[in-house]
Image (cartoon, rainbow, N blue to C red):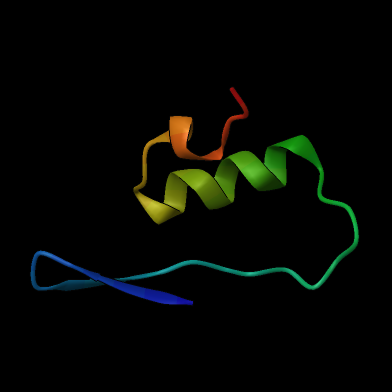
Length: 42
């Protein structure tokens, strides 16, 4: 998946797995350059 931000393109992997390891998910969130809070439940 790709996201355009401020004239640059950020490419983030989208795994096709039923379950993700915590480290894998953390890495994907970090690469997305989006705030971690967007992925946390309230």
